[in-house]
Length: 361
Ligand SMILES: [Zn+2]
Image 1: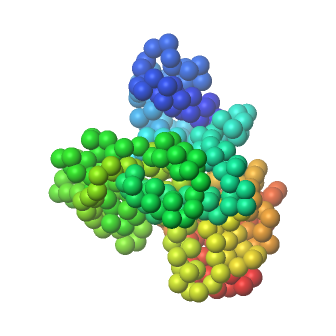
Image 2: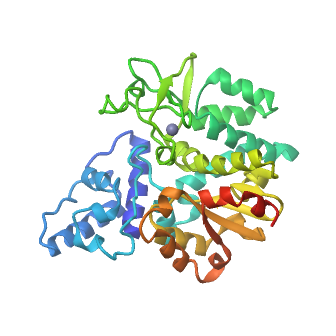
């Protein structure tokens, strides 16, 4: 699994550099290793080797391992639920990054981490405004991942955001809406989360395209509705930003907005991301949306991050994850020892239900 995670990540980097994935000398060594290990596994099981093409391996990575045609990945296999590539956004998942680190790569090699470092770098000259600016940027991304250049600039200017930060966000975190993601030239926005929908082959069900964010589609009130998005100079958050920041923010905002509505003190991304949402002074909440409970437990045991500084550190998992059979028990079992043992595991629904208690803990 570690070799495969390294392979996916290395191949993603090649794709970014070359703009395309080719079965040639650009296939990274880790991908060649992963392909031969998978091929051997298939042959040992008396199956056809369906892993001889890098495209087939990457395509397989968009579904959980238990759905691969390999007995070794089914049943009680530890990583049976692991999904290494986001099927809509086609970027490596957070779980993939976590496994890479377990495989000996540095945190700095993880794309999610590089995104964070890039923003921190742009913020380094913002002095006392740093934490506030960080929050303005992240909350804007969370709520307006489809916007216009003028809309973004107007909002950031109004909030007093440094020009260097605005330029970074416009230049690196957003892209102009590609023609291929419009419907006859018209961008459409998801009415639930506000992001750009993508045209979907099932036109009857998704006439305005489909929201690419899994956390949005898994919401209980999701009805797949979309509306045309007007304005010239439409821009959309890059796929990595959508996966690592906007998708998790859907549940973070569910919690934060519930706190505001309940009138309890809450802050988004306090102290430049010590946690996702702080409630009162003592409770820190991080939302993690890993399909694989085992990978999440290992990551949080190895490094609970800024969460460990809170008296009540809450690891919140989306309700859809908690609904996976055995998910919560596997997560809790995995967190029994080490720094992860202090974490309080809750579902997003439970955090919202207990929001007053948590804010006054
Ligand atoms: Zn949506």
